[in-house]
Image (cartoon, rainbow, N blue to C red; front, side, top):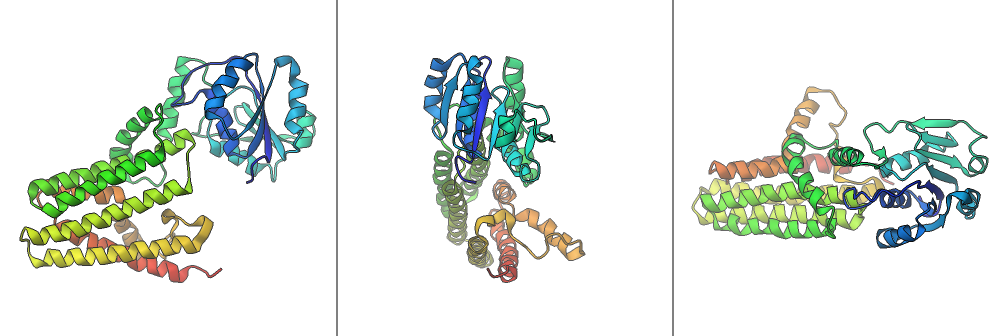
Length: 390
């Protein structure tokens, strides 16, 4: 989707200056529109001066024009001046998920005019917008659990914020992430949303913090390994904050995702190497050192195979979209492998580090990682062989 494909007409009967996790409602409306491909927005308001000062700070990527309530026709003319594909009409500013606007855009391929179920947002093709939507029927889009709500009172503010925080949980979240990590990470994200801190700031600081575990892994012994395990688990909890903050602040970027992935795996590999050396330094049996070497080799090969797959896959590439051969199958083997796959999730992996540290058996994590990494490596290599050549 290219910028300037769409225009928007936003009615603003009254300005409600509630701060919704870092932005006012009108700021969230306009930023969401900009992320959807809207190049020009016509704002119907009696508070132009106040709005200009407010929006100049955070709304940069959209051309905003101000009109009084008596200038509706002039606003409509301005909205269609660049010949957009279609025009969004907001009955009032909303906290709206970008995915809702993107779904409306997709629906216009088969349904020229689309409205959200609550009628707050309408997307009309250019001709129908000029005719006030009389040409074609309007198809409704259910918003489900997603936000598409005004914020005009403290009660609505509390309700919307609650929904926004709840929606930070991903469908791919495992048990540990959903019930143990998210409650803490979302609490931190709620605080940081009101600050200038960016997702990349969180990623970088958390990555540096994760490297501290390496020193304690190297030193060895119960207390050092317990501290290292605690650092790894805390880092795992904070690891969710950058993604949550990116969604709250509309700051998704490929660089941020790449930085997060790089630091995640580099800190994990460094911790394995340091633990392997630490095991030998404090006199544990050679078996654990050998397991450490195996875990490092298998983990490095698994990460390399996954990275190659993502690069070859291109735009659809992501570690969460690897085409493992057992996916979607109902055989006993596929079910067993799928169950074992739960133990390769990073949040559980990091929690196990901490628990093994608590019980004084940290070297056993090297055995655990060697087995899991070997399994991931095999299936990642197989996925690369199964990936069709372009």
